[in-house]
Image (cartoon, rainbow, N blue to C red; front, side, top):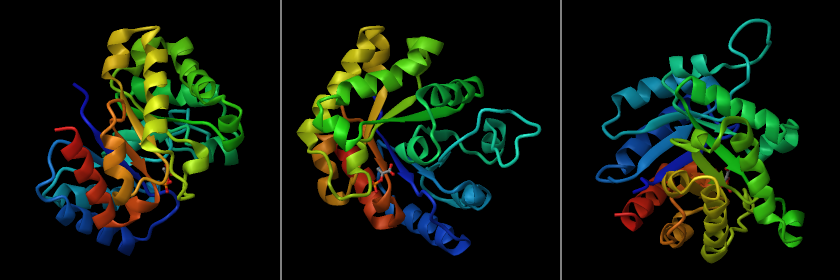
Length: 256
Ligand code: PEP
């Protein structure tokens, strides 16, 4: 039985005041919400503050991060290692987000390296995959997602996906308000699961696959009603405590 995971990706947004208000508001809004793992990924700058606030929260909030680098220590200016993330209590680490693939030219192979490094350190990779609008229109969605997952499977074996999270995020739906329909998202999620099942039915059955792309309180329940959608990776709506908690609540209720 897969456990739903709803994760907020705060991207390049935050200040001490905002982090404090958002986490306190989220803690209050999550009262009584059970049966879903709720995670947040603030900018690394605010992990320390977030760890302290989460430590005082009444409801469980998992701390995550938006990226990791591929070196452990030494002369790598500006890099952040898995050990550093662990030091601040971050466990769920987003990798391969389309914004990093696009703006920082991160390849499938580079993302797979990050995946391996996180696993090695006992952290949970949240592997983002998804197609561009042009690829979608060309009918290449499943092939693109399969290629992105295969970069991990080919280097680390399908078992590496055990305990990891996959976030299917059609790029054209991220931050655009143009969300995929729940039925289309389900079709792609089922295809992703079937692709993994070609290597291992057991791994495919257990891996959490989130949907991401303009998820809001208004459309969340429709996604979570789908059998292969196990939660959401949320950008914009995660910056509002009430909206994000409402999405988490929708996941908890749908997956009871
Ligand atoms: C994201 O950045 O991962 C995302 C899904 O953003 P949004 O919810 O704003 O579309």
